[in-house]
Every structure is written in structure tokens, then in C-alpha cells.
Image: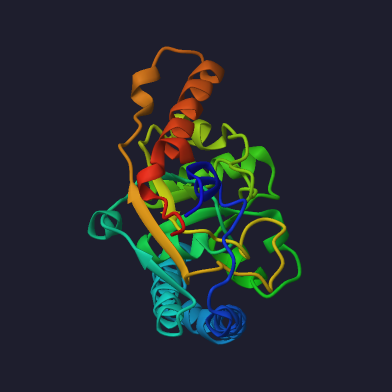
Amino acid sequence: MESASEAYSFTSPPPVRNYPLYWWHILAKILSFVIFGAGSLVISFIVFPILKLLFPSRQRFSRAGHHFISFMFRFFIRFMTIIRAARLTCPDRKELRTLHSCVIVANHPSLLDVVMLISLLPDADCIVNSYLTGFNILHIIVRQLYIPASDSHEEIMQKSVDAIKRGGCLIIFPEGTRSLASGQNSYKKGAARVALAAGCPIVPLYIGGNDKRGLRKHDPMLRYNTRHCYHYDIHKKDDILPDEYKGIPEPAAAKRLTQKIREALSDENNREHIVVYN
């Protein structure tokens, strides 16, 4: 068994024990991405036009679209579970489905994090990385349902507050990008500022499980966890209430809130949710 530090950081994986299973996992991952891409095309060019006919108002279309994407992501995760590419556990699943009017913050260890979270949150909006708003397979879905990070700061703030006031949940990854193999990135203050502007609670969700090797930032596609299929274990942490910082200047309040978010989501404070090698 590895030392605690090596197992915890996932920087030194143990050798592959079962090569046929390892290569099956890589094949299953590639197949999952192909299915995801094909499904995105069907949603963009067939499902969305139908939803627009059924729900002509912008608000009703948005709500129907969010629920449909959440449903399809649940189906996609079930598919990955069947072919042993990935699996999801969440002891707070029922509670998450009833959340509304809040900012959801989460750590960002892998490429599939937003898929896992949206599958659990039917009314979730999300601030998405600017590269997804360019010419790619997800362009239509992102542009019509979610908030591009490429928008101006003022537009992002306004759209975020509006989404929360309509009763939705807004997913934000405070790191801004996927974590590196060496650990989490520094936390940005955007989530704290949105929560202060909207006057809503912050709900931290820690994404634990096992090594996401092959889905982390800069990882090659033909790489995978050396022992098991990807396991996502998502846990709700205690709510963070911006009301505690009323009367404090906004920059100071945002800094303190961001520190509380960092403490709630740090790997160091969530070791019990991390599966180490054995």
C-alpha cells in the first residue's frame, strides 16, 4: 500500500494489475465521449427546436431545457455505470433535487464534474468556461441555456443574480478551471460576489471518490485510473450564509466568504471522502 501522502495526492499511482480491464476502461471512456457528442448533436438540432415550439417563452424554454439536460445527464451516467466507465454516489441526492435560489460551489477535479452536478440538480444554471462558447459540439446548448464566462463581468453578474432570483441554482467552480495533479488551484471570489449580490446562501458540494487520472487538466485521453473505474462521491457540506457579513465592505466580505468556501472544499478537510489505493 502507498504512503498516505502519495495515495492522497494521486501523484504516484500504483502499477496496473489487470491490463485487459485497464484497456477496457479506456475504451469505455472513449465510447462514453462519442455517445456524449452524438447526444449533444441530437439535442441541439432536434430536441431544442421541438422544445422551442412547445415552450415559446424564453423562461419556460430555459426551465424545460435545464430539466431535460439534467435527465439526459442522469441517463448518460447510467450508461457509463453499465459499461464500467464511471459511477456516481451521493448520499444527499434527495436534498439536492429540492435546492433552489442558491449558489452551488464545488471543487473541480475532473472533466465530468459539471455532468455529475447537473444530473443531481434539475434547476441548475452554470457559468461555463469560455472555450465551450466557441465553435464546438456544445456551442448551441451552452449559448441557449447557460452563462458563458466570456461575457463581461457586468453581464455575468446580472445573469447570475437573475437566474437565482428566478428560483434556480447557480453552479460555480471557484477554482475557475480543473485542478492539477498536484492539487487545487487558488480560489476566485466570483461565487462570493454573486451570493452577496443575490443575498442567497452558498451550498458547497465536495466531489470526492478515487483518482480521476485521464480527466484532470492536461491529462492525455489514453490514461485512466490504474485500478478501478472512475468513482464520483459527492457530499453536501454546511451552507455558508452571506448574511453573516452584512455591514462589511463588499471586497472584505467576498474575501472572507471565499476563505470559508476554500475551507469547506479543500482536499485537506475532506480526506474521508477520498478513496485511496489499496
